[in-house]
Length: 184
View 1: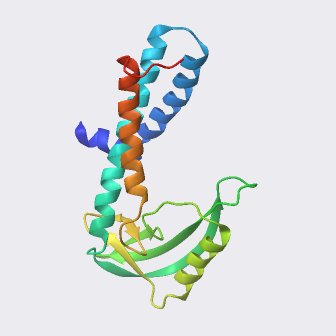
View 2 (view 1 turned 180 degrees about the horizontal axis):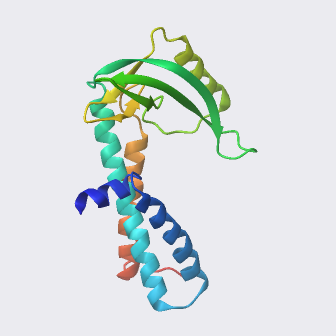
């Protein structure tokens, strides 16, 4: 049961999508209606979402710390592109796909790093050009789950931001619900 909750928090099950759909339905509905039970459910979902973000921060932080010691495999079949938040956005993230073998099994994937951060187009292009220039290209993979892989291992700021944001999303509703913080 705990594994399902943790995997759901990390976005690794279909229940993650169900949870987010429920949150996107309940919280705005609670905001625009005057049902006390719906408001209570919305606060509970917000606290749960905060806990999920905190859990994701913990796991991402630990994986990024461990990633510098992960085994590496030579990658092949490299394809790179840029994703953006929306067509009018100036924020991009490099999408890097490659294949690699671990114990005779082929895996596809690889993140550039654990930052999961959108940047300016020039920065994202620079990351792609850096990867294309790597000869040979190596992918660091998690030994217990090679589907988790990264090209540049190490810690970045995003796990810490998730930890702080997750704690705030848990604490603030509790403080508001207890009356210690009053919303007008």
